[in-house]
Structures are given as C-alpha cells and as structure tokens.
Length: 76
Length: 120
Image: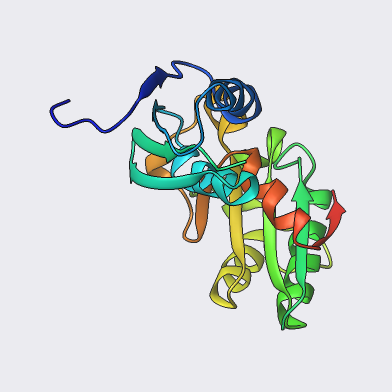
C-alpha cells in the first residue's frame, strides 16, 4: 500500500475473536510505544470488536477500514 | 445514568423454552431503563438469522419473533458471536434487524463496565 504508515503488519488469516486478540496483543507488545501496526482480519466481528479491544487495552485505533485496521501502540 | 444488563443465550430452536425466556427477561430489562445487550453464542446464534425465530411460540408466552422485535424497537441490542456464527456456516447477509456480529472483546468491554449478566 502506497504511503502505508504502518511500522509492522500482520494478516490474521482464519484467526478470530480470542485467539486473534491474543496473537495481536503479543505482536503489539513487541512494538515500541507510538508505533503503528497494520492488522488485516476478515473476521466479520472485527468492525465492532477491534475498536472495543482498543478501548479496553489503551492502544489507539487510527484507521478502521475493514479488513484493514491501523493501531497505534499505547504508551506505557 | 442507565445501568447495563446482559442476557447471554446459548440456545435457539434446540431449546425454545430457554430462548423465549431469555428474550422475555431482555424485554423486562430494557423496559426498566437498562442498557441491554442480548449476547447470542453457541446454538443461540441461529436466532440472528431472519426467519429462524418465526415459528417459535412457547405456550404462555408471546411468539419469539415478537419478543425479539419489541426488544430491538425498545433500544436493545443483539450481539452475535462471530466464530460461533461462522462455524455454523450461517448467512451474515440475512441478520435480523438490530443484530450485529461481534467478537469477545465487545462482550468483555460491556461486562467490564459493570453490567449484570444472566445466562440461558
């Protein structure tokens, strides 16, 4: 993607719900605070769930354009 | 500020009694001024598909379709477990009005905000 601001990207494939969120958490924790992560997920629950997870965890949702989401890693 | 109330339902046409009572209680909650969510998971997700609830009418209760419709019209929300829905190969283009497919984080968020929850 041209002009992609993401520092790291991951396609969750068939993962959804809890297993996807656990894997996502592990990847985000490895990022430096403030860096942007691009998640690709085709899970139909993601448009509601990814924003909810960001509110719960403190990571900032900077783009929600299903199936693409950009998350800014929270500042510890 | 309204309280939050969750009704968790894991049954559909496999247990019409539980499915019906869950929506009776959901109607009571929304009528009591509670921000009310029905969370459909496991077999319960089938009720999110239009037409499935249409033939359910437990003796002594309103028809299930009426209960679901009145719940949504009163401001209640129906959230549907995404992996449960996908596992059953159900059609996401045929959701009943007011139903949204979600993952576990939305349920966790709602409950973590102090919602009471009753399960059927």
